Amino acid sequence: MSSAPSPPIAIVDYGAGNLHSVAKAAAAAGLCAVVTGDPGRVAAAQAIILPGVGAFAQCMAELAARGLTEPLRAHLAAGRPLLGICLGLQVLFERGEEGAGAAGFGHLPGTVCRLSAPGLKVPHMGWNAVRPLRSSPLFDGIPSGAYFYFVHSYQAMAQDRHDVLAVADYGGPVTAAVQRGQVFAVQFHPEKSSVVGLRLLRNFAALAAGGAA
Image (cartoon, rainbow, N blue to C red):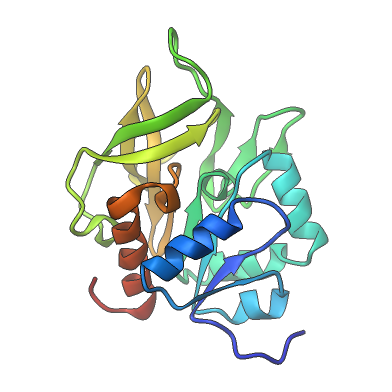
C-alpha cells in the first residue's frame, strides 16, 4: 500500500478507459485529483471518479484483479461522493447484458442492455441535449438542454425512476445521468464536453468538498 497522502479525489486507474483525457479535464477544471490504481489510496479518497470505456464484463474483471472492487463497494456503501463516467455509470447497476452478461456493483437496481434506437446508428456517438428531470447540484449553472458528448452502445435501464437524474433523446429517452445520494454518474463524457463538461466536473468537486460550485 502506498504511503503517499490520499487525494481528495481519486480517478480510478484499472488499466483501461480514457484516463488521460479525464485527468486533463479535471486539471483544467481546477480539481485536486490524482490518477491511481492503488486500492489503499482509492479506499481513503474523499471522492472518486470512475471513468470507463469498453466492455462491462472486462471492466468488472479488471477492477477485481487489481483489488479495487472492495474499496469501491465500501465507498458506495458509505454514500461517499462518486462520479461514474460512461461505463462507470453502467457498472453501478446490477447486471450488464453485453456478451454473456456480467454482474455489476448492484448499487442501483436495473440492467444495462443494448441501446434500442430504431432508424438510428448504434453506437450513439456525438453531441446530444441533456435534460435534467429534477434539480441537482451536479447540474448547477448548466441549462436544461445543454449539449454533452456521448459514445455508447448500451443503456442503463433503471428500475427505480427516482435514480434517473437526466435523460437524452435517441430514438426515445435514454438515461443520461443518475443520482442516489452522493453517488452520481453520467452516460456522456464530461471530459469531451467543452465548457459544460468542465462545469459539471467543478460541480462534483464542490460536492466532494461539501461546498457550493
